[in-house]
Image (cartoon, rainbow, N blue to C red):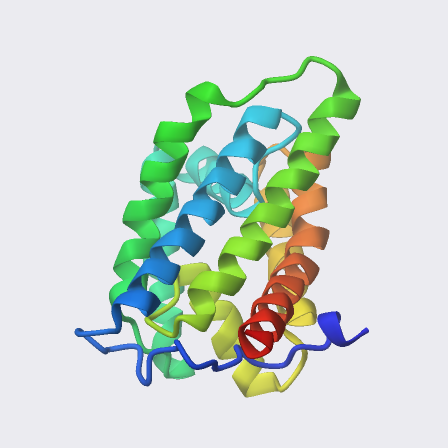
Length: 218
């Protein structure tokens, strides 16, 4: 399928010419913010579903158990380590890198109190799946803006460029390795965790393909 064979973040008419563009077009900036908002609501759906945390949170849990750090500090440590990995991958940060942290956090904080927290496991799975799809769609929008990726997405695009493999494969491989490491360190893995690990790569690839297709159709 073409949607799962995307090998790089596409460029469209409203994409920034460079991640370090400090004066992007208003359209590009608005699409970046919209994409990150969708991303954040998707993350909030995963949290509200209660079927399992994301692989990176499992890793933070495991590191916290081993080092005695709180999950917040462990998450920060992981983010810093991922950003350091950008150096050999020659990834360039931008407005989107900062906006990634601020807007996603705000979207989670604002939307979470209004989202359903189902008791039925079937509904938990459905809500988790919807969250993964929204994260994929949001990723497609904000990454194509080309204003800089968040730490984990930057790792994904950097490794894709080095390996040449499709984004879906690269992202899935990263998430599986992360969840395995977190689990070995003592982190808790749920069905939602596994859904995210195996689903986010294809979801991001489909998001990129769809945004690119519609942008050119328009």
